[in-house]
Image (cartoon, rainbow, N blue to C red):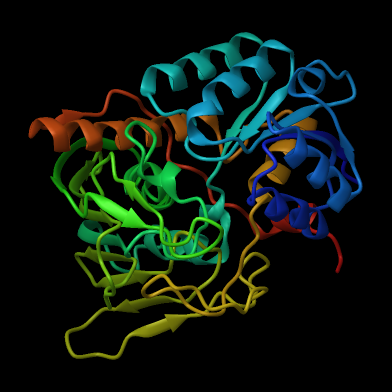
Length: 387
């Protein structure tokens, strides 16, 4: 039986509910206390989920807490993670690792020095969709991947989020920081580390209007670019064209397509855990479907329609598996999959895309991570509760 790790949650916003739901699926994590700079939010979270509300400082110094779950806003990720590590806690953070590369490097350095685990979302690449894609790529079903496309494009969150302003702020706003981690982490998982990027900015609307909630109808200023077109060249010489946009009303393009020497592959939504993988190995042939709905982390468990273009109404969502897998790795003294090295490399690609788009110059990636190992069915089953 796995050890159940006692977790302290910092940041009691909307995403917190997802991690409490993860306790339903995974057998080795338990959130026992929460904190937020907004005391009301912390107390509301504690009341809703039957745990104790404390201050951020109290939680960081609490000897009962083994892992800090950092669900604060992106610009606070670095400071909270740093404080957790300094206080001797393992840390698992929402994406991105930090909002600048130097801060990410500092976190990795502290974690290694103190021999603590540094984990980071997204963990969606551990789901059935990306893992099945990985299996097929590594079986050479489509041959060496030469090129491909990855597309995230929709109008932005202002129509359905009551407080959308943080997604459009100067330093931590924009689609690259928000959605880039899902697509880039999936691509690194499939193709390995990157070596260089180029980028172009397209400026969208200067003002957005909030569509719901108490501020409905209020206009706010957009302070960041809202569309990035970039090209990522990987160390294996695959070249992927990546589109990340908050300016597209609708589209019918696939999330990720890979084009190899022997065929093509359609990779399902990297923001979710399930979805079918499709391959085609001859011009004019039908696409072959590889379903993931019977895989442990591919089974459908949500049935709500998203407003985002090309996102399926039914899918699998097992967010929190990265935290569970890290806890298991701590107990068994092994390398975890959502590692600081991978997160730092993804952050390097993110910041390099933004720099390349601003400067018009090629940016070379100076960090490195090993291509993640496959998440085996045996390891998954060790973490899952019998529901």
